[in-house]
Structure formats: structure tokens, C-alpha cells
Amino acid sequence: MSAGDRTQAGYRATLEKRPAEVAAMFDRVAGRYDVTNTVLSGGLDAGWRRATREALGARSGQTVLDVAAGTGVSTVELASGGVTAIACDFSQGMLRAGAHRPVPMVAGDAMALPLADESVDGVVISFGLRNVADPDAALREFARVTRPGGTLVVCEFSTPTWAPWRTVYLEYLMRALPSIARAVSSNPEAYVYLAESIRAWPPQQPMAAKLQAAGWGDVAWRNLTGGIVALHRGTKRG
View 1 (cartoon, rainbow, N blue to C red):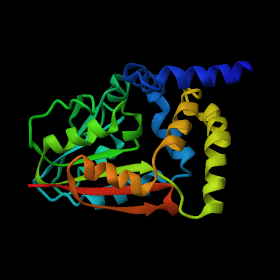
View 2 (view 1 turned 180 degrees about the horizontal axis):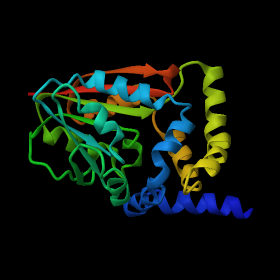
View 3 (view 1 turned 180 degrees about the vertical axis):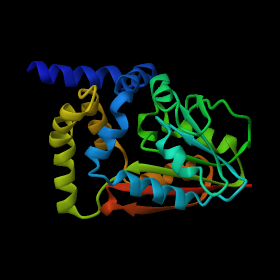
View 4 (view 1 turned 90 degrees about the horizontal axis):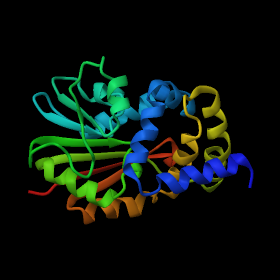
């Protein structure tokens, strides 16, 4: 096994079930996280954020929670038209990197949010649920803090629907993504873990079943960019 292989295996073994290690990893990439995401997505990230805001459909006067918000770029997108959007992340480094943004920021774990029961009108988590130690517990926690009739939107990498495109995409994840990250990221080894976490994430239908099992109703999804990203939406049952 080469030194690079050992490094990659070490990241997989270390991060798999240790939330503190995942948070520390994000602390290390926080400084160039937004730039790296834009480069790796080919600039598609801005459109994905807009689509997430539109799927949430929050109205003026409502309060929404952006979980795993990172530096708050996605939260700023949500905070438009009189909507109050709160950024929440378990990485202190990410919160510090986004402290200049004009949105409230709180430290918190997706599985134990620092909010009261039924205190927000909607919850969004973008590209973060797959990094949670227990995604099913997080989905239940999102339901706890959401008012009846409120909305959950999960924006996450998913499975391309066209087989040839799926093959190209998976090759990019495992080969090109870490290589590009070495040029632009402050911690390129972390993107080995991120690529593997994307590959291991369930496709659209099983993900919808997870939302339903956690108590969300009217669950549906919409594919973006040929299924590279999927927006799953659910409503808090009254």
C-alpha cells in the first residue's frame, strides 16, 4: 500500500463513526471551503442553492433553520424576502469563517439541535446529511423543531439517472475530485472522505423512504443536473 493509499484509508477509518473528527476536518477546510466547492462543482453550486430556496418556499415573516450551513453562504440565499434564516453548524471553524455574513449563526449538532420544539417554519440541510453519524436521528430531530405544516428540504448529492453519465460522474468523484482539490483546497485529503461519502449515499427512492420513516409527509424529490443532486422535500405532519 502506498503512502497515499494509507492516508486515504486512514481518513476513511478515522472519520466513519466519529462526529468530532468530521467537525475537525471541516475546521481545517473552512478557509477555502466556498472557493473549493465552486471549483469542484463547475460553478453549479449557486444554482443548486437557488433551487433549494425555491423548494423550501418560505414566506415573509417565517423563520427557517439551515443545518450544516458551513460558512453561511446557503443561509444568505435563504434569507430573502423577509425570511429569517439561522445558520447552524457543528464546525466552529466554519462558523468563524462565515462570521461576517449578515445572518445569525449558532453552533449545533444535527442530531441535537439547540432549538425548542416546533420553533421554526422550515429546515434545510444542503450537502450535510451524509456527514451526520445517524441521518435517521437527524431527520427526526428536524421534525421536532419544525412547526406542523412546516417544510424540510434536503439538498444532497445523489445518483445520476442516465447510466453512462453515472459512470463518468463516479469516475470523476474518485479520481478527478481529489486531484482538483489538491490545487485549491487547504486540506485536500479531506476530499477523499467526501468523495467516498457521496458514493456511499443512498439514491433517490431510498432517501425518500428515510424521510417518510422519520415522520415527514408528502415526500417528493426533484433531480438537479441529471441526478447528481436531488432535492427531497417533506411536510411536518400536524
